[in-house]
Length: 269
Length: 86
Ligand SMILES: Nc1ncnc2c1ncn2[C@@H]1O[C@H](COP(=O)(O)OP(=O)(O)O)[C@@H](O)[C@H]1O
Ligand SMILES: [Mg+2]
Image 1: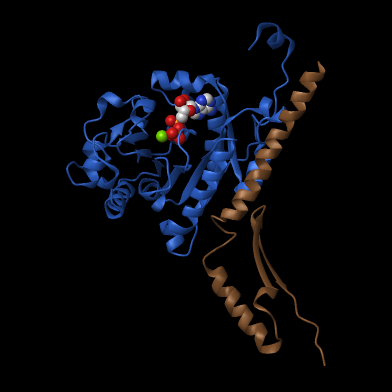
Image 2: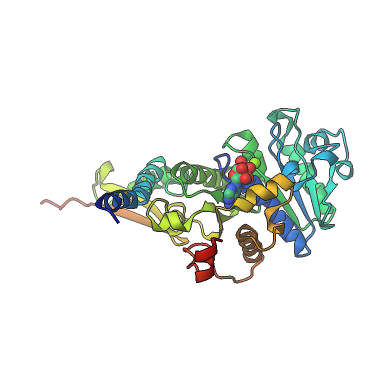
């Protein structure tokens, strides 16, 4: 059985692509054959974050329009044989994708035996974002602890519940909240909304929180999903998220201020 | 800690709370989802019709709310039936 998981948010710049890259790399790491698709036509970035930008020959739009086969367009990850990337087109506009075309590609990926199809959504709530979530079985709603991001997440949840294929058929897309750029220090200082307030506002269960971390920028500079930056908090957070998504019980971390030991106090981090 | 720190600290303490309260208002008002599914107005009409068969009530006397918390939804109906005069 294949699962289509859409990473979405409404608002831009909250961490969808970062999350898509690490989430799919994490699934692959655990032995699941996974493909991650960049739906951000015209603004492709996933290839850079995954470090495969120089190997893009054909893209998602080429496949949807029948100009290339899926086999030609799929890029196998350098480090993990279970992971494939389907890049977005950089030159076409959003209208190049159609519901039917996307559906055909997803069906073909299912036939190829992919267990997880991760869809990295563009920002917004218009056609591009709606296409990215249309075929979703589950959704990771990426939210920052900040008013405009929470409001936009609410909007995109509304769209998941009315415009997805699942909703049209009377079912529902399973929703998960992924809080990114969470800063427990600022929460404790009363400067940032706490995770439980956001859960209450959105009515979606927390899959996990990713702390604000310098490692995210470093990893993206190197073209590597941050989950592979072993030892970093961001990697640990994404590993938890993948494990919980797969049904493992893991207590939440990174939600409270870590008590600094004497050594840390003396030498910084 | 100076008094100023204390004061600004306190002011900041309010800012997360303020964010939450403002969002609560906005989200309820916009009702992007659940709180107002498509069937709600229709259902309200039909419930009104049924009640009207038995008692005389005003359109405004029926209030319907759909609330969601902790994974379940609560449908709340409020009907005010006028006192019967004879
Ligand atoms: N946990 C994090 N800590 C610090 N920076 C982050 C974190 N998550 C994302 N970012 C940064 O935020 C920016 C936007 O992230 P991106 O994943 O491209 O968002 P989106 O795809 O939603 O537009 C990037 O510069 C990225 O490095
Ligand atoms: Mg992106």
